[in-house]
Structures are given as C-alpha cells and as structure tokens.
Amino acid sequence: MSVLTRERILHEIDEGRVRIDPFDRSQVGVASIDLTLGREIRAIENAPEPIRVEDDTDYRDHTRVLALDRPYRLDPGVTIHGITAETITLPEDLCGFLEGRSRFARLGLMIHVTSAFVQPGVSNRQVLEMSNVSSRALEIVPGVRICQIVLMRTEGRATYAGRFRNQREI
Image (cartoon, rainbow, N blue to C red; front, side, top):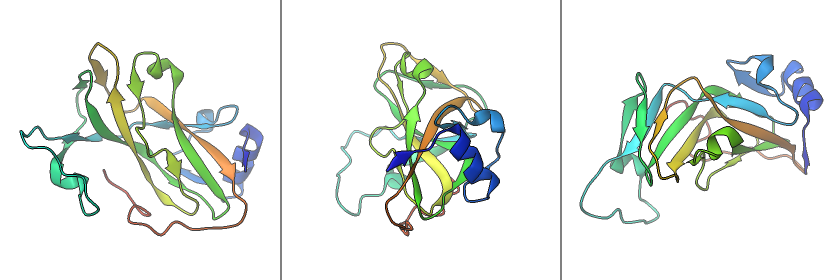
C-alpha cells in the first residue's frame, strides 16, 4: 500500500473517485485531508455498575447524544465520541487512517482510541473516539479541523459492508 500525496488526492477528488462533503481544497495537506468536528457528540453516561464487554454490547445503550452548541468540557481521563462534519466516500481501492493533529495532541487530546481505520468503499461520517489524556480539562468546539485522514491505495479491491458503512450520525 502507498500513501497518496496532495497531487494524487486532488486528482482522485477531481475524478470523483473520492468525495468529501462539504469540501474545501484548503483542507488538503501534503499527504492528508483535514476533517472538521461536527455539531454533536456522544458522551458515556455515569453509572455505578460496570459496562460488560461482550459481542452484543452496544455503545448506544451506555451513551447519550449531546448537541455541541456550546463548548463541551472534556475532563482528564474522559472519552467522548465526536463525528466529522464531512461525509467521506472512498472507492474500492482506497482506504484510510484517521490521525490526530499534532497541535491538539500536544495538549493531550487523542482523536481515536483504537478505530482509526477507514475501510475501502465507505460513504459515511467518521466517528472519533476523543480522549483527554492531559492533566487539564479541554474545551471541545465544533467546526475545528480536529483530525486528518491519510489515504492509501489497496492491493486489490474491497467494499466494507459492516454495520457502520452508511453512518450519518453519531
């Protein structure tokens, strides 16, 4: 697999093979595309009992959606789900990885805990598992270029058909 650079990314977008909606060409960097934080988050509800992790455990049973209409205080040690404002559509021969931006990582904001992989053939908004690993609270606001996607060409073609294939909401 090879990482696409700015020239190749713009070519794929201009050809209509990669779609980012909404999109501004200034989002494309040297070898990635900046993505912005959408207007809602999902927070884990506080409860005294632990969440049992099993095959059928559903995160939605233990979280609630909140509008991000004012800054959200993300305390140290807390994880929330954010979602990109952009819908990303990839062809069957491109995949991607979500990465945090160093300016926020240096403040202790992790953008994804473990699910950074963006499958080939998706057309969805990307959920971000945002964690504060610093010693100070962080205020999370919508519209910030919070992360980036690095695109790679696959060997062969595949289309993700899992439960989050057409994800539009958090």
